[in-house]
Length: 86
Image (cartoon, rainbow, N blue to C red; front, side, top):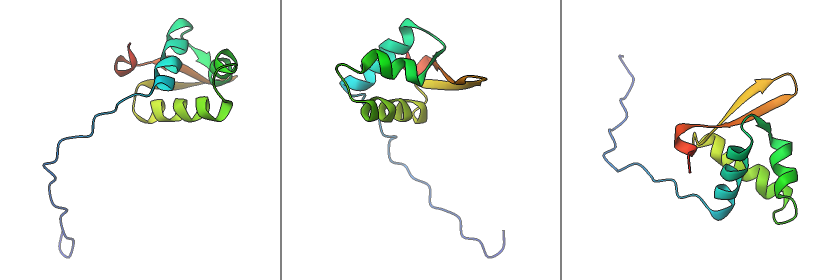
């Protein structure tokens, strides 16, 4: 480790993820049909929410670990994780 500087340790508390109402609606839609595709969630929520907003919410929930995106031959299947339970 010669020549490399170590990063300082951060003692700041971790940021808490606060879901928006759209995040909650997406989680509810996935919980009603486990193993659904992103397109299914978008179609289910289209009248009230825009497609880009729903897809963005799904991406955030995947990155926060609330949803799991398993691959299948037809695309990515969404499943709730223990963090995503409502």
